[in-house]
Length: 107
Figure 1 (cartoon, rainbow, N blue to C red):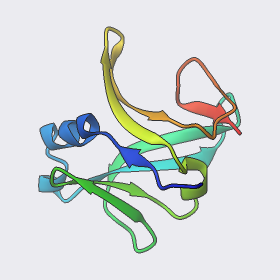
Figure 2 (cartoon, one colour; figure 1 turned 90 degrees about the horizontal axis):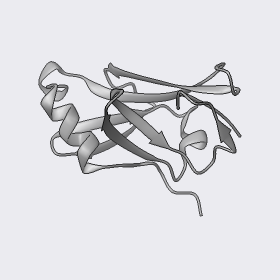
Figure 3 (spheres, rainbow, N blue to C red; figure 1 turned 60 degrees about the vertical axis):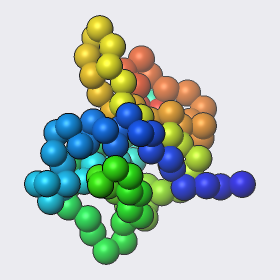
Figure 4 (tube, one colour; figure 1 turned 60 degrees about the horizontal axis):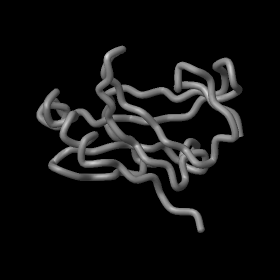
């Protein structure tokens, strides 16, 4: 069964920390062609567009455009803090392989 992506409380909390909503912004997660494995994630702050799926939590929003949505079905959008740095991460069950950087994948 295909479900829309889920966003963790930790990801929404990080968006609140950086004040995304107070700046009129939301986290956009998109899938583009390219990267070392075929597709890559683009993650940035952006304003909502008419065709976006808007996922809300903690007063913050995450945007998924209609072209990227099929690639992100059942995925989990999270925020990770590790020794090498802090970043938003996508746990995508649709990806058959991914590169070491975690921003590129194949299906």
